[in-house]
Length: 239
Image (cartoon, rainbow, N blue to C red; front, side, top):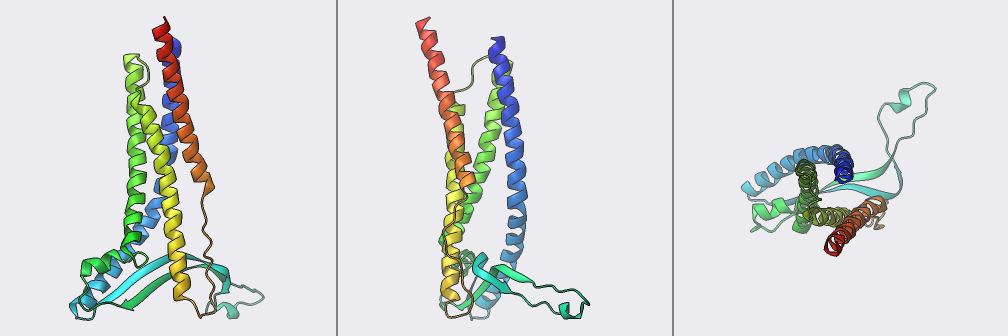
């Protein structure tokens, strides 16, 4: 029993470390984007409401971090006044704000839900991504709480943790694929809007394989725990 308790304690340390790193990573990557998106969304919402109140509704939406197929020279005023210094600024990504005429009978809420990418589906996918990451953090907290209780009560690991781990793995993969799909759709929409200009958009569908691999490893870990629990139960029945 002492070996089992020691194993649970090591698992607790691993899970707490993983939880802290995951929470810190999400906070570092998501919070700045959320704060920026909230600020920009508030400005767009005010513009949409003002136009609708004036009887001239407009569809305003954002296309963020649109990658260009080639670097674009970006002139900055005042650089030519620097002596003996040559600076050549270029741009690889664009943030676009699109303003289009809307149906006179358009609903303001419908226009607001189009603020991300010009489609309510993009808004829905963005919300689902946020909910997936929140669910991952909640599930990790539940696993840590379950392991602490297992150590305190000196019993085996709760079987629900296997399902929690599986869910975390699938949610991680879903959130990443959803993010990549949304980014690809926005790039495609930007390419349509910028067609006929000298600006080319890179519409390649890209995937963060490191995140996908992490999700697969989490699912694999859950299956290893499931096999260990089944073997332990079979040994008990044999004895």
